[in-house]
Amino acid sequence: MLRVDLDAYPHKIYITPSGGVCKWGGMGYVGCRGDCRAWISGDVWDRAATYAHELGHNLYLNHAGSRGDGGYGDFSATMGYCCDVRCFNPPHAWQMGWATAVAPAYSAATLPAGAWERRVLPAAITTSRNYLRLRPDWSSSAPGGGRQLNIYLSYRKRLGYDGGLSVSRGFADKVAVYSTRAGDPQPYTSHEGNVGLGEGWREGRLGTGLVVRFEGTEGNGARVALCRPTPGQERRELACADGLDNDCDGLADGADADCGGGGRAAPPRVGGTTEAPPPTAPAGDAAPPVAGAPPVVEPRAFSWW
Image (cartoon, rainbow, N blue to C red; front, top):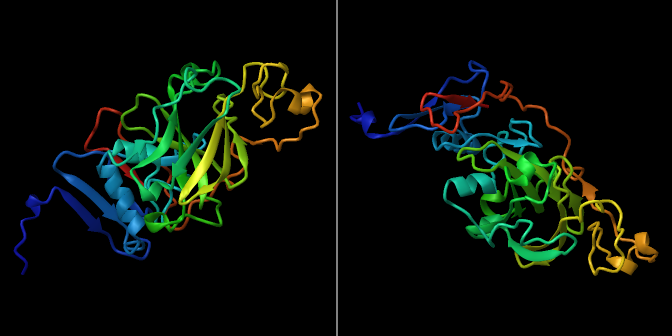
């Protein structure tokens, strides 16, 4: 007989019987104070991602969805669908205190319209200083004029604990774009799109118009370029002598065909066309999402997948 004082351990995980007894893969308290519990279905007890996901709930993390669905559709994130091994996405890594930005947050003041900003993003797995954050306060159509929104960029290279990033779903070795509600200490995160090497992507769902290009690699890093269009010139360059790329298509002034030039830049893909189609719930994860705790932590709130 083991003489173990279970009360000495604040985190407890219970493994339920296999054979479809439970219709969920895992379940756990969202936030807890000294009594932290999670349950793992015996059908997925051998999947490391299940434990990381449910313990993430105990540590106040909510789900990682896709394009605002409030669900699990972010296949680059531990708090998304089971069961590939991969790390937490940048908003959740920041919430845990495990990651910081490579530069101060961008806003209208630091990302002028029509001017490209270039940075090297290290692969997220290689360093804790690994993402870019933007507060799109230039947008009149984004939530709160963009002031209620955070956008994150992260280079998710298939290395280490990110080695399980899905190739077939298009999540491996891409610059990933995420959004969260600003000021929420316990946010549901949203994967907005992936940008492959040599590709461009234009944000279209939230109304920011942000353009992201993945221009090349540098060691284990990605060379990325950011541009926000000049209001009124999102799709067509109208000012042809101001030295700016007002429509963020990679061509400025006379080089742009809109201004009579012969240049032909590849237009960025719009709002998520680079990502995989919406997934269906895998076996063992068929239960519908359940809202987790509100910002005021409730240690008896449940969340499952």
